[in-house]
Amino acid sequence: MDVNNPQPHSSLSDHELVLRAVHHSDQGAYTELLDRYRDSIYYLFVKMVNNKDDAEDLTIETFGKAFRNLHNYQPTFAFSTWLYRIATNNGIDFLRKKKISTFSIDNPIKNKDGDQFEINISGNTPDPEETMIREQKKEVLRQFVDKLKPRYKQLIELRYYEDLSYEEIANRLGLPLGTVKAQLFRAKDLLYQIIHKTKGRF
Image 1 (tube, rainbow, N blue to C red):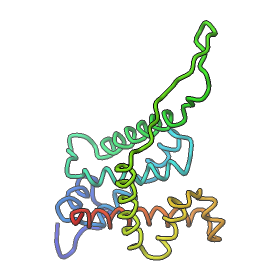
Image 2 (spheres, one colour; image 1 turned 90 degrees about the horizontal axis):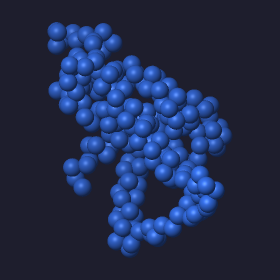
Image 3 (cartoon, helix red, strand yellow; image 1 turned 120 degrees about the vertical axis):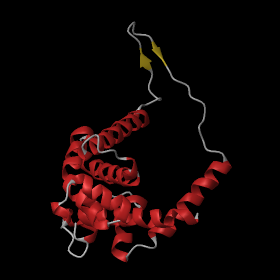
Image 4 (cartoon, rainbow, N blue to C red; image 1 turned 135 degrees about the vertical axis):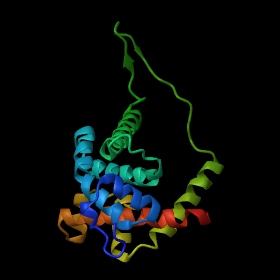
């Protein structure tokens, strides 16, 4: 390849893009891989979790995991196969956690004979040390969020601090839903980059 006249990223194979991303920290290569598979990964999650907001978040998480482990990718398998495996495992973990978190322990359970019994679980309240650690992590995350541009910072705050849905954010800001999703996707990507660049300082 002519260094002075490099090929456009769109003309490169997935493996070539991976090599450029890993060995040259080529941000354009990361972007091209994201553009190629973002929609298919998103629709995979829509089918898995049946919730568009969760699918958006899982898509971001999947690419974050993939890009952090890109140096482990082996061309024995197609990049798409490797990426879909990460996505599928991510979706399965999400569904498993969601199933556990939505399981009610307040209602009696009936067995096949019609007998009822209750589940008694000891308190799981975090001790003061765990609470302090959690608060410290929140404070560190807030420092990262504060580094974002105002419009991206606002989106992260509305989504994750006020726990608003994409539709609620669109209504609050008077923006089209598609614009909110695209900008929040970008905001989370920028936040990941900030954390990744500074993680060695903590």
